[in-house]
Image 1 (cartoon, helix red, strand yellow):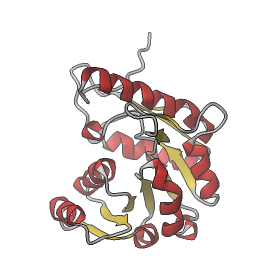
Image 2 (cartoon, helix red, strand yellow):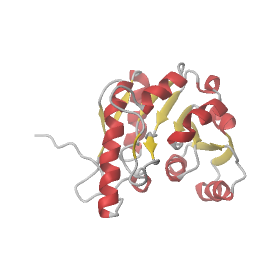
Image 3 (cartoon, one colour):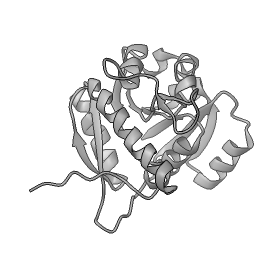
Image 4 (tube, rainbow, N blue to C red):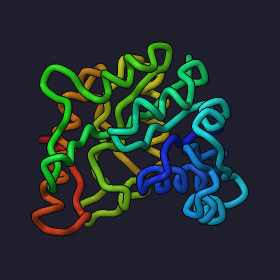
Length: 214
């Protein structure tokens, strides 16, 4: 599959490397494809990896992954071109973090709306699925914990799109729990804050969520 990664930070690099490791063709999109960190990532990811603009990565993709910081997300989508993503599955990994009050951040959107819902509105013809936002980039691909694989909670309006994302997540080493529509991002983004606040308290990224069943 051709995967477009929109964003060049730790999340985009980790997920892009994971997709390339699984044999997918991956193009990382950014405002400046000539950045040294992007060249280093392409070299690390291997022959199936390349880089381009946001628009080039979106047009290339059969499935896109949005990995931008929240403050740059809407602009990145406009640069990518919503028409390039029409009809495609878009995995939304973003969290609407507000650092204006310092660290740890707070959520800029919540309760009656979410980043996931806003992104679906900005991409009305795409099939947005919220995923990968509740864990740090170090454990996004093939997470290994003593008690077994953690759970990834997802949400999205299109059942076929979610089925495709669940298959990909399984290949990434995750158990998956589908919470429902894209409005469930209202709960997944605060869930990410639980992960983030715990990180700042213990200064470690080595935690993830697991739903216990009886």
